[in-house]
Image (cartoon, rainbow, N blue to C red; front, top):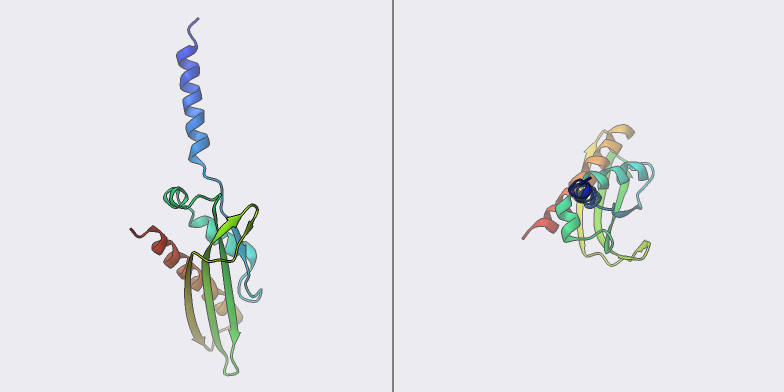
Length: 138
């Protein structure tokens, strides 16, 4: 009974599957609850994890933090600042020594609370995109 080639093929296939799934990055969110909840910020980070990014910046050494702040002025203008940061990892926590930071700003007059939250999500997406582009640049 010659099962050796079949077993070898099975082992190679299972090894490739294990390597294909990179470990997720440690992410933290320090945002104003009125503009951004932690679950939304975490989902945005997971959507930007690529194999190339993980290869260049291993998840065992790096993590990401986000911060969205702002609100309404007296004249009912929604003002939002969103920041995305890549931070070094120290065990199971992140050290606040940003290696890369990107920030996006916006103002929307006569906005509702929902429109302001949507603007905050958009601006955090822009900050994450800008940081990712800077990290992947040659």
